Every structure is written in structure tokens, then in C-alpha cells.
Length: 303
Image 1 (cartoon, one colour):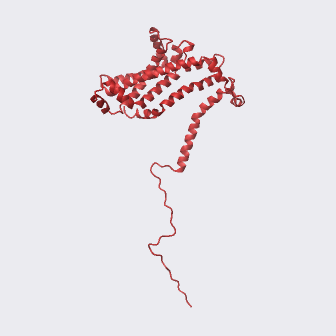
Image 2 (image 1 turned 135 degrees about the vertical axis):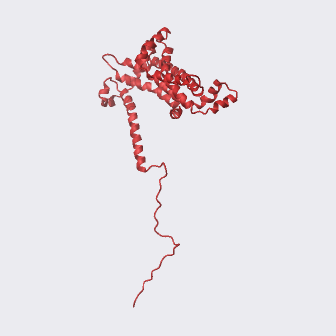
């Protein structure tokens, strides 16, 4: 008896039982998992590298002996806050704090006001020699501190501003204003000129337009200029140590030098003072951080 095999074919419209999952297509700008892991790893390493000096400074400030930095492993068993107590009670720390705040805030306020008005004038007004004026401001940054020290001292002596907060503030403004004026000029260039015209139509004077319309839009640029002025006055040593003669008028940068003598260096006290000094800077950065990145990027788009 013979058998025959009949082959049957499935209808064309019957779906196949074996289907392959669709391949996920990565969108534009999306990174693979390996790329994401590598980038996050690099960011973590970079963060650790940036935080290590700060953590090391705090760790050294907890050592009671001035030579603990030579054997940092021994600090673990004898950590103490005695260095901070000594700095706050046995040194003119609060005099240094007062002097630093007067100089830095004065430099920031006066410097930003002058830089903002200068940058706005050059950005909006085309007076004779305005381009040369900006280049002159830039040239003033080329002279080293050693060259400027003697003539500045003579000028301050004639004005009786040696060992005076105002004299040091004016010296710092001569350093910060040229750079901040360039910065603000570039930022004002990004603000449409039609806003000035609208202010004039509404009857505002040039100062009214500048104060009520332009300055609120220039907050990021003002934040960058204020931050630069603050840091310049806060950490400068050469001018402060030359023009401020009284111990009670030292700024923090100069006060740190008192812990170093010809035969000795109290590095544990220097570390504790440095940690305390970082607090005002961190607080100032916290207040301006919202506008800092925007001002840094926007100021360089036009100019």
C-alpha cells in the first residue's frame, strides 16, 4: 500500500509565529550605555580631583601640631578643633574679616558701577575715540604689579590714602574695572537696541533707561563682574601688604603671612584660617551662582 504526503501551505494573511523584536534606533543626541558610563566615570574622577585639595586642607586643620603635615596619618588619632579656637580667640581674625569685607565689598560695588556705566556707554554711544578708549583700558592690564607699585604708592601718599581702605579700594578698581568694562560691553551688545528706543518713547532719560530697563536684563553680566571683582580684592596680596601698614587693617591674604616667620611656619593654624576664609567666598558664590554661568557665556557672543 502506498502513502502520499500532502503539503499544506499557510494562508498569506496568517501571521508568522516567530517574530523578531524591532531594533531600537538611538535618537540624535542620545548616547549608548557604555558612553554614558565612561562620561559619568570621568566626571566623578574630575570631581574627586577638584575636592581633594579642599578635603586635605580641612583634614590638616584638625591636626594640633604644626608639623602634622609631615606625618598626616597620625592626625586620625588626635583630631581636635583647637586650631580654630586659637585662630578665633588668639589672633586678630575678626579685624582681618572686617578689613576684607570693607575692601572687597567696596571694590565690588564701585568697580561694578563704573564698569557697567562704561560698558553701556561704549556699547550704545558712538563718541569720538570710543574704540581707542576700550583699547586703552585693555593696555592697562599689560603692566606687572612691580611696575605699578611705586607710582601708585606716590599717588596715594600725596592723597594721604596710604593705610586707608579707600586707597586700597581705588587701587583694586584700577585692576578690575578694565576687564569688567570689556565684559559688560560685550553683554550689553546682546541686549536689543530697540529696548533703549522704547524707553525714550516712554519719556525715560538715558539714565532712566539704563537703570530701569537695561540693568534688570544685565543681571547675569553684573553677577560675573561682581564675582571677578570680589575674588580679585579678596585674594590679592602685593598691594594689600604694601599699602596697608596697620596690623588691624590687614586683609585675610596678608593676615595668613603672619603665621610664617623666618624660622617657623605654623601650618596647622594656616590651614584652619584658610578653611574659615573660604566661608565668605562660598557664601558670595552661592548668591551669584544663578546668573554666573549665563553671564560667562552670553558676554562673549558679541563684541
